[in-house]
Length: 125
Image (cartoon, rainbow, N blue to C red; front, side, top):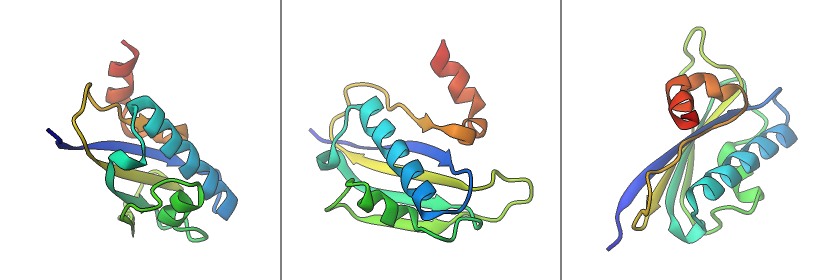
């Protein structure tokens, strides 16, 4: 029996260049797939958000360019511009449609580790 669950992930770029966005999204999706033992066939949809200071590349387009989710619905929105929020950030909500064999592993890379220090500490135990 299949079930639906979600995997959260986030990363950052050093600056707003298409190649940096491409690299960050590729690394994020590769790590999410590897850490959770999933493939494109398991992914029902992906919702990306990116902060207002990333304007040169849409994260969903970067995901497709990296070879992920070729037949999967992708959606990208602008993150709310919150005072003091993390800059140059890309977040992903990966919706999975298959029976899970273990708890989903959330992935926070680069400066995005600051978004969930509670999770990162729990993972290291």
